[in-house]
Length: 75
Image 1: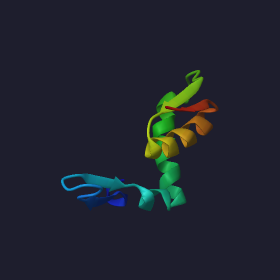
Image 2: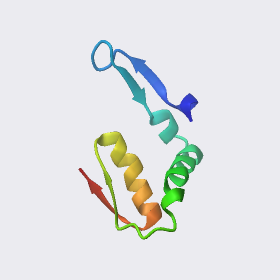
Image 3: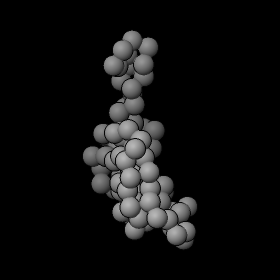
């Protein structure tokens, strides 16, 4: 999936390499593959909740929680 993650150099400050996942999110098939791949290891477990930090984590964790039938808790 690396080819679908864009690098924005020096954003928001010099020296930072910001990883932009919006190209991946804009493709429903790729987004589904990522969510499925991140959910599958937990599929047969009794998961009560998925916790996540920061904005991009919220996007993925919310979808994973939905896929697992679990609550989503943003931290």
